[in-house]
Length: 119
Image (cartoon, rainbow, N blue to C red; front, side, top):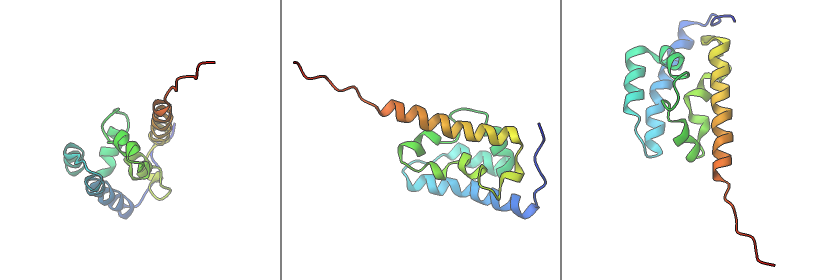
């Protein structure tokens, strides 16, 4: 596996700013991930994403799925073409899988069995 591709400091700074901005977007949806915001501020957006993408339940993805706003997730942010050079292939693969798995498990979880009508 290759490591992260070369990205400019300006791209890294924009990613960091967007990671900090996730807190405000989440707050607009009714929850405030204070620990996520603090982790990003202490470690930087890229370093935080690199670590959090491998820790389940740390990015608010399930809440975003419930709100129908998966495009606001950290994982979706990582996968935007302009930010992909900041991450390794493994990190991007994990972000892709998290989005796919969460969506798949949530859609299955929403199915409800309906009682059959007596004949």
